[in-house]
Image (cartoon, rainbow, N blue to C red; front, side):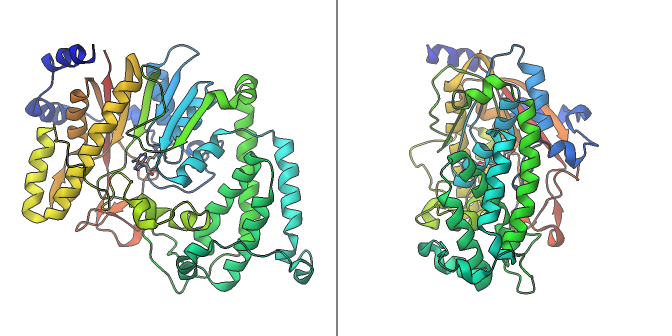
Length: 451
Ligand SMILES: C[S@@+](CC[C@H](N)C(=O)[O-])C[C@H]1O[C@@H](n2cnc3c(N)ncnc32)[C@H](O)[C@@H]1O
């Protein structure tokens, strides 16, 4: 059956030159740029619970749902949840939301952002949490509470010492100990996410940078004061979110929210069950997502071994190659050939990336219903002077997984939303002040249809 379908797709496959021509003729579709949206709109509800670079805005997910989902019941999936934009949006509409991410912090972020908590109950819980820790900002005498032993994950102590001064380490350890005493898991996760968000401010990580760089001139923020402020913001976000969620979803959140920690190539989602996939994949050698959230990974103890942890992240330079698979996209093969002349190592990383993506698209095809669509948001990049046409390659590869290339949307990214730049030499995202070329002035939404 599956083989028959793929044969049909083969007959109407767009080949390399046709794809390149299609992209050449694409015009920017202004209504997909969401120019002029204010941070209060893009960061509404729970969307500003935690910092996260390269997230897409909820308006983009909302528009795709408006275009492609007509009924009241639908199952939405995101294999690369990131900060959870797709999942939060799906839950806000009363849809089933499934998805995965390999990163523990992304899983936690998505779970907390998508789980509405009864506002008065949350307020009581936060008040009592603040009261227990009041001694940290002088509300009570510190000495009266010296029996609270800081909880500092010892297996990561060297890295924690690298990023935090003694006072902040101790204060964070005390806060973490109290958070983990909380018995209600939803409240505990809510507090853990707030804790994770403040780590960067409380460390000597160079503030504007997504790369792990120390700033010895930085004055790290005081943990408890910063946490209390952020909790107030999250509490407001939860109240607004709670208001838009139907009581049916609130009562049965475990039925609607079906997310897990795991690999996008093997989702725990039944075949032929999903109406639409809305996602944005990692980019080849762009962010090292494991490093990006390193402080949370250390404190929340997500990884036994950071090296091993990184090697499962698609797009990471540490990703292991799957030697048994072959690349199907001729645009990818040509790109790799060009890169080989400049760097064998990066050429291998690009090959590994597209082999992984091929498998993610196969998995997308498996879980989608007939008539369902996968929508992947992706931008093109340049590494060592070689253009990497990710979007064209995605458009070519999805066809080999069985999809019909249904539509490609070209959109401008308002700079307010993604003020990111790339380092010309390495192609990696750089901190805002020292980068040399603008990343993603435009990007694409590559849409495949399972017919
Ligand atoms: C571009 S981000 C997604 C951003 C998301 N659309 C949002 O709005 O926040 C890509 C995500 O892919 C995740 N990722 C990397 N390798 C993965 C894998 N093997 N399986 C699942 N997720 C993976 C990263 O952890 C990262 O969160």
